[in-house]
Length: 253
Image 1 (cartoon, one colour):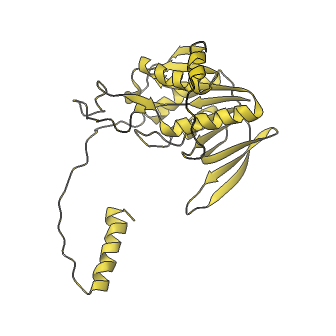
Image 2 (cartoon, one colour; image 1 turned 90 degrees about the vertical axis):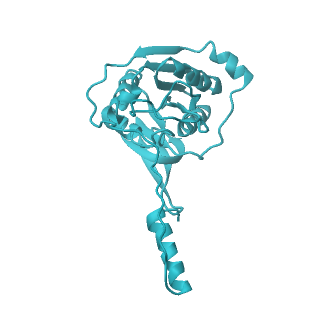
Image 3 (cartoon, helix red, strand yellow; image 1 turned 90 degrees about the horizontal axis):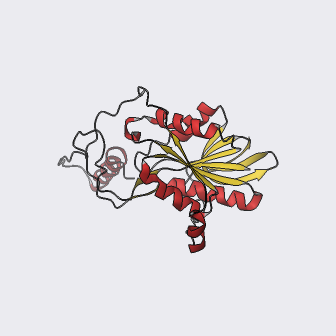
């Protein structure tokens, strides 16, 4: 089984992020980057499938030269090959544009299975994987917690709401978006780091960006507002009003 894993390099979670001067994106000049956490779980799922069923795991990442460090980390953990899609303008591409360059690179590989993280830590749109599946014309399933190979297909476990799960059988080829937390992530060993230096990393040029279907107009910090509201009534009535506001206005419960 040939498994392709789409991974993304994102700013570290504790990074101090500042909006760029033009207000269109974040200032990337002084940031440390790491692999997108949901994509790390997609990679782990792929490696476990390879260990159980054999085959090959290929990681694919689009971005500037700095993403090669994330590809090397994936190779050190056990991926067999890497594909770097050179693109210095990801911030100017919408979901469709990013999915298109990933799909173009993957189509030439003729994979049996494509895995991505459920969503990215920086944008959190959760769209790239399903758009890729549509561009490639293959079935997909989202929010996957576990994957099992069954003859010529797959059996997957999907996470639903309120503690419910769904078990689905799917044909191959297919694309799955993996939920975080389904497996325990592995660390790169010293031997894996050494082997990564000898593994193939193929570089391809991304096609020129086309006019985006969606344009990002502005990136800004949430605007702080102070508002005081006095609640009146009996203690039970006031408590009910507080619960309602926490649920529907503040949305913390």
